[in-house]
Image (cartoon, rainbow over the protein chains, first blue to last red):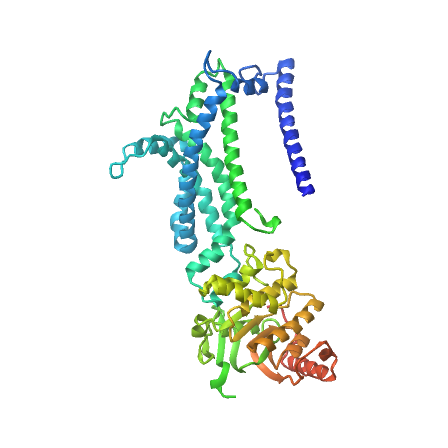
Length: 286
Length: 264
């Protein structure tokens, strides 16, 4: 117990040290470039590289006189984007797993489908997002039209499914051949082999994929908001602050900070679930 | 012994692998009676593991007939007539010891309370009481192999197929496991077919030792072991034990096992 508290303290201290190091690098760079007047790779001033304390400070300034703090708006926007990303992650992970399971089971699909799965990821998401968002805008299922944010979730899902598919294929095939033979010796049905052997054996692979997918889903959600002119999420604020960058550069940096924090939170949720679900010898956790 | 009351009856079993036609087994004739403890011994590449897998219907023979409990090997496998133990324990890392042992019972549709009762019995049999909540990777190699044996015995199969189950253990653990296996065998009264490449292990455990030769894999002789039961640590110091070890060794040499050969 004591050692657990000890190691938590060490980790917290390490985190603080790293943050302090990053702060020192950022501000040191500014100071050096400003004092020497170097202009490469770019001149340093309050617009190109605001002070870190100004960026954090921007969060705690009202966006206009008499209005709430920027942080208030950021929390709402982050929650909105988080909803899009979480739904996208769920769809992407499900589709990715099912596709991976089919490919792992039916070898023909490996050659037939996998190239298209790979090709799907070579299309720049910015080129695809408007097509999906606008295209799905006219879709209605039995009189029900998906809400705008759901279309953004589709973009997030598009970025999510790929790592999950690839790792599902690898993971399901990673079961020890002797363990498969053992299941045969019990005359186990294929369905049992899948659920009781292949899926558990794939768990470390799946969680590696979920970690990549979790952060990708946040990126997908932010990008998906751009062409759909959704104003409620982080993407909307990014567009907005982009236009005023010359005047208030620290605002854009502040949104970026919030977006990064959201991505990290998604990642940490996956790590937490993995700790609860996967029981493995510690060194075999991927 | 007639083929009818044999637990395993193999007639003219041959097995060739691949297009090159490597002959792993040739004309195997073997009858195993109820309650016997049979060891298959031979140099690597003699097909002893293949023969075990043919009996267990994990490998299909190229020709010949095999009956297990009077049925085809396939039927016997589907009827879950045998339990299998490999050289590696092949335990599922994500299951506790108790859940590993219960795995075959789960697949066979036993309900929770029956599984729990059976697991308790088996934990006692293999002397692992108190370890039910442990995970496999928290156990030593010998304990892991005991879990694998308990798992194989969980559904009380009439036949136990063991492929060098103690091959990865150190000598001391191995001898202790040999004694435990004999104790379990005498308690449950099932038939055992045991693959090994240790002469003393084969002699110590078996009622008969089947000696095989490589390329092609054939049975060259069968040595009956008349050491009294129950066997103990002292059995290994019995002059008769040494005579039998010598007999098996000479049978192996006569079969060409000492010829220089690459690893198969």
